[in-house]
Length: 353
Image (cartoon, rainbow, N blue to C red; front, side, top):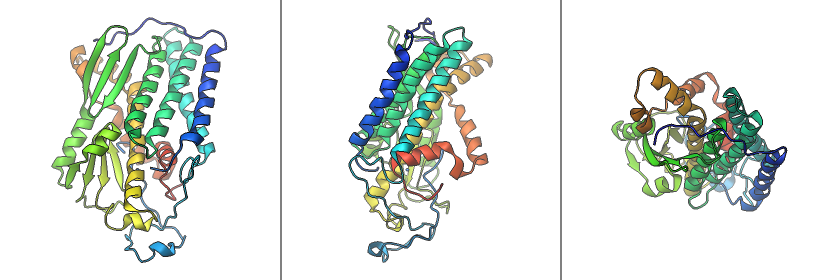
């Protein structure tokens, strides 16, 4: 399957499309308090470094060995309908609105630049943004297979936005990440082709070659839709508990066992669940950025450099990752919007903001 684009179509008539987006917003908001069930931590960022607080350690965990870099951070109970520790329904509404606007503006402006309809692109792009938020929400919860289902739902939403931006039918092409592989499904009869995410592949290989005591957690990998590696011998004092390098998640296994979890007032299993949920949100952010902006720019750039279409169809260089590496170094951790989103959706409760 090549990279042909679909013909421009307009799926909305008058205010119908806007009512569809409004319906989606209402649906997401109404389902959030009903489905939220307990909390569940980046090439893009990292699980928050621990920051000391003046809040006293709860008596029940006061005798537990305390890691010197960890702060005494209280837990916030998660009740049925609670959006998660440290988050409010207002936070989720803000994130939903942000994702809808990102999708809408991406779809509208790109279609308009191609002599299409801004309104059509905005409406369908916003619909895709709403689906992307729903996928992030699911990935940030500690629910069975929520990571994989959330990642595919979010990728479907990003694909919808991408199709809208190109004036193609809403489900013209879907991109579904599966570990280091991306499946491109052309629903117009083009079939399915697979491409290799080189950055995720290199990150996974690097984890095994870097001497950090890496081991693949197969169960969590399948549940997250991407490789999850436990590192037991990572020698640094950065204080982070997990990172997502492209589509590969690395969790600090030593932090799960040496008292870090007790120092923040939770058990090891809940600590690990929250850490992984945080990083799953970062996986989706990585997918979202590549589908919406990374692939089009990469395709045009590599084409200008003379790289053949056959290579571009099968190898994804994910050069958009370099942009986020740069942003991480100029924007303080506490001000990075992708970290704020991951914290609010995963229930990580660090005093970082």
